Image (cartoon, rainbow, N blue to C red; front, top):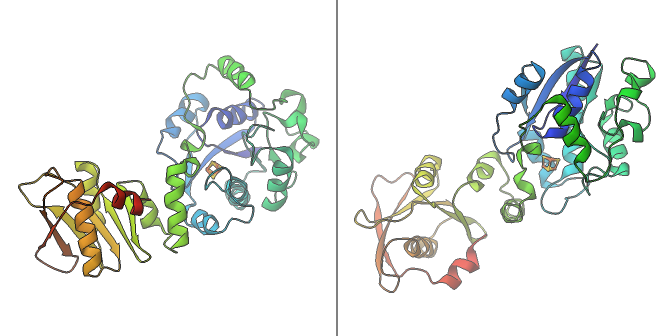
Length: 326
Ligand code: SF4
C-alpha cells in the first residue's frame, strides 16, 4: 500500500508522513514548488529521517493563475492559503495513479492557522480538491471524520493523533520521540505572508504584470512604480546589480552611474519617455556615492542601443523616493 505525502519542509508535514510510514505504508514524499518559498534543502531531511528520495514538482504556473484571483480570497497578506491547499491536493490527486498510491497524507493541524486550518476550511479544502475520504491528516485525525484508509483498515486510527490549536508541544514531543532535530520552515517561509512583499505582488496584479519573470524580479532590489506603465528596480548591492543586468531584455532600459562614481545598476521596465528617463536617473543618482545637493551624471541605454547616453540630474529627494517606492 502506497501513499503520497505532501512535504512542505516544516516539522508537521514530516511528522505526519513518518507516522504513516511507521504503519507500514510506503510513502512517496512530494514537495510542490511555488515561486514564493525560499529554497531549502528539504530533500536531505527526508533522506535522513525517512530514507526516501523527495519528488519535487513545480506548480508555479498554476499557482500564479490562482494568485491573480483566488476564489477563497487572501489571508492576512497576499497568501491565498485555501486555494493553494486545494491546488496542491488537486495536483496530488492527479498523481495518485502515476505513483500507484491510494491516498494522500498532509501535516495540517486543526486550529493551527486562522485562514486555512480551522475545521470548516479543512472540510472545504477536501471537498473542492475532489479527494473526499482520501486525505489523511495524521496529526489531528482523531478530531476529524474517519477516512477511507482508516475504514478499510489500511492504517490504524488508534495510532493517529488528535492535536489541535496553535501550541506546538505535541509536535515537539513527537519530534523528540522520532529524534528529528532539524527541520525547515513550513512552506519555506512563504513570502506572500510578508507585508512588504505582498505590496509588490498587489502592484503586479493591479498592473496586470503577474508573470514568472516579474515575480523573480520582486526578490531583488528596491522597486519603484514610476508610472502606470513603467517600473524601476534599483540594485542594493553588487550581486543584485549583476542580477539586474542579466534580467535586461527587449524593451528595457539599463541605468548606472558614471565609471568614477560608485552606485547601483537599475532596470527600467515598461514604457519610457524622456520624463521617465529623467525621473529614473534622479532616483539612481540618489543611491550613488555623490553629493546629494549637486547635479551628477547617470548613464542609461535602451536594450537595443549599443552605447550609453548621459543624463545630468539632481538626485531625487526623499519625498520623491517614498512617493514611487512600492
Ligand atoms: S502560506 Fe503560502 S505556501 Fe503556505 S498555504 Fe499559504 S499560500 Fe500556500
